Image (cartoon, rainbow, N blue to C red; front, side, top):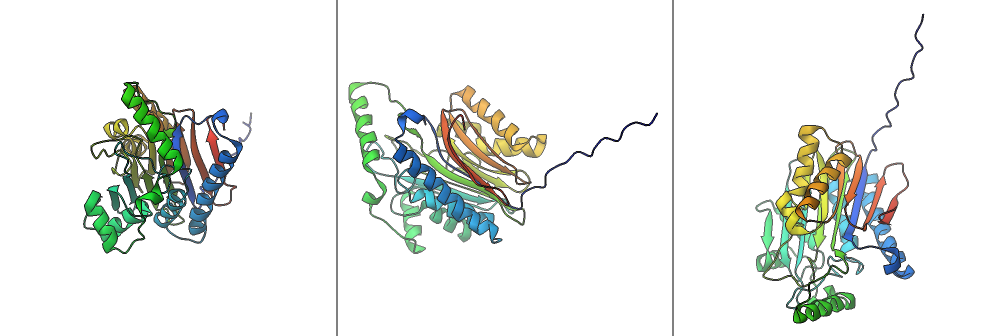
Length: 321
């Protein structure tokens, strides 16, 4: 008896390029956002995808694409990065950012920046300079001036919404009430694979309202909030920084993919679950070596989007999208 011939399994071809972005994760619920604010937020995410995708479609590098996408989000007050950053307990603004490419694993990062209009552009200058990986505070501000980057007065970064958040923080601090996360983990980021197969990741943040003592979160720390390795994946995170640092979240995802052969989604979900067990919430975006995108979050929502060669871009905000 002749056995029937089974059809060959069809594996869809990997996209020639992929871009994934995020704009923060946390308490993002439909009743809490006005239609106007939702429309503005979705439009900003779409613009970031457009700018990053244009570079990738033209054959540009993943590194340039993630920087371009993050700069769009830094310039939009809907997000806690650059223009729209939140205030420290002292009423100042301190900006952190990192960028990394996966071919040679070169990276640049800055923390405690106070005047650079686009912190991710400063992180890129650190990467291109090549002498260091992470510059902090006054030193980073000085390097920014030396590099001729556009500066801004402190008032440019703060918004009325951020000032209202700080006022609420001080009210609860004065009355001894526990602080609540009435917004979200404020970070923006992008990961990409370009036509050559190179990966890159970038992240930028204003930290969290009421932070003290020069606190630095996971965003500018390579292997915690930002990581790229052509042998595994590119990762950008947005979450409870102290827990993501302790987990080494971004590198942990890459290690699981590289050594265990897990998919981007499987590795992201596993590491997110481990971080949640420690007490940390948030979200992560990933792109694998084959261009497969993934995101994973354990909050009510995450501002996010994905674009790939030959496919319609997707923007989402809520947990049920």
